Image 1 (cartoon, rainbow, N blue to C red):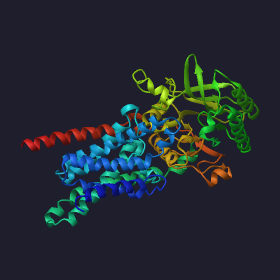
Image 2 (image 1 turned 180 degrees about the vertical axis):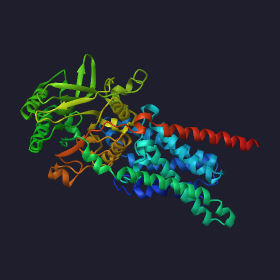
Image 3 (image 1 turned 135 degrees about the horizontal axis):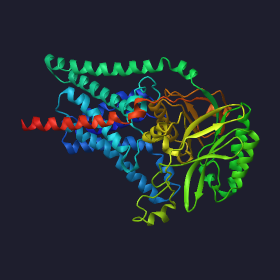
Length: 518
């Protein structure tokens, strides 16, 4: 049993951490989910620590990202192989953390309490940037329903929350170990000072969250507000590009919008690729949408694929209340193997196996402005598909002057899984990091509005179907949104906290080498 004990502890950690994420959302478990793994790593060789942590990471990512296989079924067997390799790659980050833990395990609690959370943050930062980046299921994301503790994200980004969660796990583990293992009272008292410092860090973060939330409702009411109608048509993925279904798709969006018009919204938002035309290659259904907008006399933001020359873009298009094209945003952050094939020149066979043509990448940070005949007006930036999961992209839009963020997406690829809720987690952190309201129009959900403090705003009106079930139903909601031009520390300076974590690790490594030489 002793032989397999560390492996069982690794499995336990993976399971507990998974429960902290959607759909169970028992976020408090994240504050102790790493403890079994940390005990399993004690006294292990670097290679053993890597393997034990790698298993934990593989199980964790498989349990949270299994829905990637739903996407793969739309392409071919090679896509399923690619997803498997991707999960094996993601697990490396847990494995590397195991190696780092072994490197610093003999240091004092002072060192471990700060260096190990720094290491975790550094690994999440690399994961969010390497190979275009993938930061889904970061440890800090587990706290998206814990509004007090996520407020520090306006300084540190999501990485600060991850740092606190890892620090808590290490502190609790060391305190448990101090009383389980026979140590002298002197040795136990040596833990008191670093433990108190750790507690102070948590109290400060907690108090900062309370400080930020206390005036939140008053601040929200004092900002300029408009109402936005969000349409969730729930078009199955097999219908999205099925030519005989195109008229039905457009009619479903128009019908839901006409119901929403009864509540006099200032802007209507449809999801990604809700217009099934390839603009400006064909425009039959686009003209139908224009006619609806002119009759409604309300601006409309919708998603469509557009053709310009020989290039195709995944785009967001804003129509004025008169039905004219007011602006176009061409998606900047493309999804590898979904919207383009990396190294296509060297891997030409993937084009035939996956059947994917390359979209072109947009170059501009477009900020839309809208107005309607009733005097309603505002401005916003559109994030298409997964772009709301890329913190640096949202930050740049805010720096360009966007007072509101709007995410239009199609999560129908994933089926009825936890994926839409994992996607929602990222939107909540983008709102807190930049203190911006964020509206989500998702084809199959989760459609909602999020305030500047990361809380889902109760809609002014909502269709009965959408009120009863958040995903895989059609409906609409009317949400109040505010426009804010203030910039947070995170907006101005970006991931300074993550960079500082890299610096701390470097200093820790150098001091370790000096100790070895001494």
